[in-house]
Length: 120
Length: 110
Image (cartoon, rainbow over all chains, first blue to last red; front, side, top):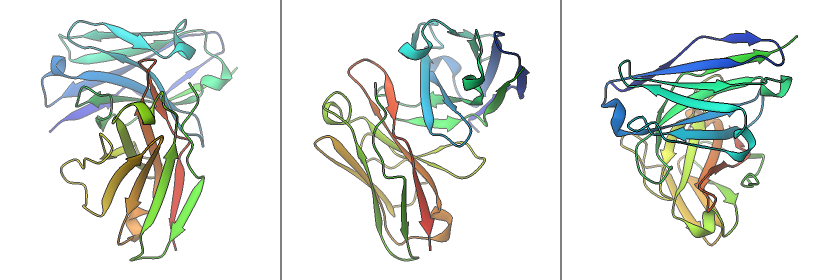
């Protein structure tokens, strides 16, 4: 079955970087775009950006433009999201989600989420 | 890009119908038929319930329906059941080639 499995929880100090992975299985990895969405504790969902696993092209939310890098490894069907210059406000659960359509409106499925805690 | 506006909470009794609104602008909801709704239970990942305003993915109950009028989209759940209690988020594609989410609505089944 289609599955997105993310890497485990991370604890980082302010100013550090974190890299979260999302391994896809059960479908042709390069056929569907992947998005990253985060959710701070007790808060709503926030879109971070999108990557095309086929060509590797990306588009980021302006808020994260200077600090986020999304990459993919087609040999392992994995996408990565690296966030740098971490601050306490970046403490959140980070999700990857496959985009089934071409209108950014069919996120299915989602990964299980990766908790990133930023604390000194 | 500002978040879409949703009511913080709605409630209903089992068997009743409820509607959750999601208000944006002409740059997002009003400009595209690319509105989605996601259900999220505590500690779980979101689940797609409605896409492209009113389409239901395979496996989602037909008790869930979506619509749009102008800059406001709506999610209606009919025949409320206990398992429908969750947070619901709307989302929309925007003219800035980004995606924006609503702040979320907590649905309580009384």
